[in-house]
View 1 (cartoon, rainbow, N blue to C red):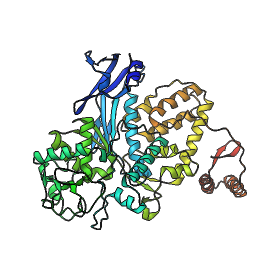
View 2 (spheres, rainbow, N blue to C red; view 1 turned 180 degrees about the vertical axis):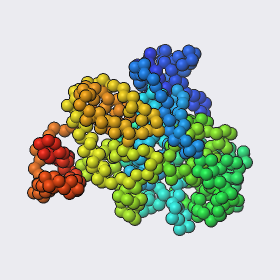
View 3 (cartoon, rainbow, N blue to C red; view 1 turned 60 degrees about the vertical axis):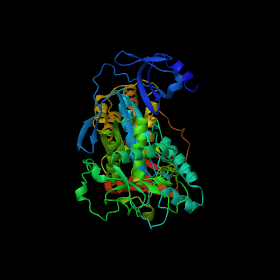
Length: 529
């Protein structure tokens, strides 16, 4: 059996187990007593059989060292205020990628947000179950021309003359590789829309039976927006303020009863790929319904945290909430958490602007991809930022410096709790302030080397920068004549007290991969690899 060895090796440890229970799941959390039972927090014993297990994990326990532990607080979009994240096991749903292209660094910022939440919870010894969907069908383009496609995956497949699922799997694979490069802990489940069609159809049938959905005059199935009394709860966009004519979905929605209704199931029409049989005829699902169906199936009717980019707040999350609540008959998501937009070199990333930056582009420049992770964490997740090559390059230099310092500070594995860093993490993921604290500790001569190392290791449990990775052995590399000339010019500028010129030249050298530092004996330099 698949989990037999894992269960046998975890007896006496705290574990999280998901059991198949008919068409749904049942979750257990507690100390494993033997291969058939565990003791829950309230002292009761729960039994199971190994063949029921769908998911098994040993829960790491953070050593609190009798310190006072705070709850994680996050800014919740709907309430517009900080909310305490409570519970022994937190359920998280994150809107994942549409796999018709590579995810750019703005997309990756949202996935980093989920990772920081999960790591902060783990720091408190709180278990979590995380789901991130893969949209491989149904996400329609915004610039439709009325053709029979419009599906982003299908459009890309047509351009490259390959099968649609081949496109989807290619970019899904690249997405997972990018997550690994950024040290983002994988979700527990990555459900694909194309593999959950039965769950999606079942959800639509339930919505129709409940009077929340209807068959339009064109044969498509639509959600009745007016059946949701609290529509606008997240975004503030109330139905009576939404004007007809706004393209909420896409061309071809002419059969709906109300302009703000949206498609749950689209008939295939001339489309011949990525379609499925349904009670309403061959077709494919709308975009929003997949998240409702899959989150309810995998997480049940109580989701503690729903994460996404701020661009998904409306209409996607507003529509998703209306569907999910109608299916469950209750408010399902407790906290809606959104990450802000990211610009690159002063502009929104777009193919037309030629400024779309991928994780692979950073590695291609010889920079550590974790430099992007560090550069993103220099700002709070809900603040818009303008990322630049200069900021990524500077972050890479900081990473290399810290890893060298960690090696100089010893090789101990001890982790030392730092109250200030910890409070920054728990207060809405204030990573920028935690990084400032690390810089202060680095320079503080009153803190011993072993203590510095232990505090950095503590912070890295959330920061995820692999600070103890070490650095490659130094290899002698010759400076170019141009670089030597710039260094000489900078030394002359400093001697003349022209600090602005000195800083300008230092930035030029940094772009070329040369880090310059000033000390009592003058400037020194190092070439990054």
